[in-house]
Image 1 (cartoon, helix red, strand yellow):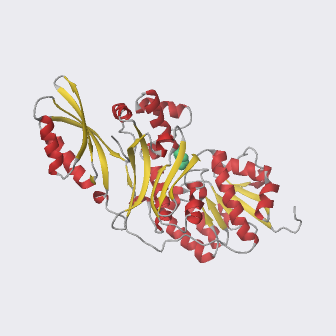
Image 2 (cartoon, helix red, strand yellow; image 1 turned 90 degrees about the vertical axis):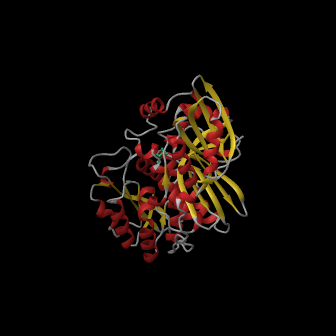
Image 3 (cartoon, protein in one colour; image 1 turned 30 degrees about the vertical axis):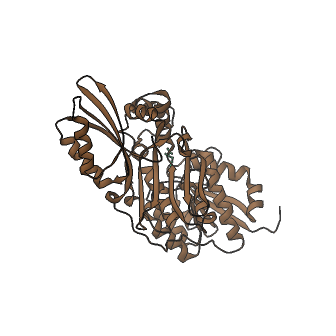
Length: 431
Ligand code: HSE
């Protein structure tokens, strides 16, 4: 190693599952990482909220005084892996004010306060990198931000939450109910003790906001993302999707509408088995990007876990250190387009509607008439009789969410409809 290399000191906020892996790799691979960065990388301080020893981290580095890390004049780069909005936001702003570049894995923070943080980084002429915030190890941020910067992205669809993908995979492959699989996932450590953020789609919504911002050069926040989770997906829907050669996935979708607005949403989707995202199983993540010149691209890999997430953080560290070594910074986020968010009622999809009706003549015609009254054209209807009752599965052509909601309300009010069991959006060619 070049003895004349500049030393770059690192302070890390957080030493949990991800932080401990970053510390381990930073120390074990110090020489290689330094050679690749063009500077001698040294982990100087690790900030934790509860005092005490941490495996693999020298006690002399550990402090509970997080502010002392972000204000330390000898520290050049901050790695934030503590999560949550506060105190992470205040600490990052303080670090930026003190001219430190920042690497963060904090999707909730960026999807809420990204504009403020990126502006602060631009003003201070420091880097703010966040590859680990979306889909863990998958290099999707840099790919969209840099490699695809010369193209026009038209749509991004991602399986960006491993917990829900694991649950949906088990339901599909083993025919088990949601609640049972969730319990098993918690016991195996795939799902959190409080799984709300994952199963209700909030974690995916933060990632959708970041992907939409990058794809369309605009600032999109988590509260602008329409969000539905998977807790209402029943095993009957899973079986019905399977019978149609489809699979149910929770997707984060960001797309450009015909009015040049951004439609950004997280919800379950029925996907044909032939779609590349349909084959993404268990806790794996994938992001499928459609763009004008490159066409379709798919990025696949591990979306969570200590070492995979640390890989993305260390990649950012090498990039940011290369800038530091030459006393420069990379170009900040580009949000010049400033596109509006499309109202969810105007967004068009195909729909799967499963309902129970009285099994007698004329019922199908009345149901079809109700769809027609809301300008919803039907692609296919499947019926299975059950004595007095019949189950209808209607797949519609594309229609707006507003039409769908009005149609479902009318169906629910019909005497011949005992229940509208479920409504799921459909992507791709479903027969
Ligand atoms: N809890 C997330 C998941 C990982 O299940 O994929 C962190 O975003």
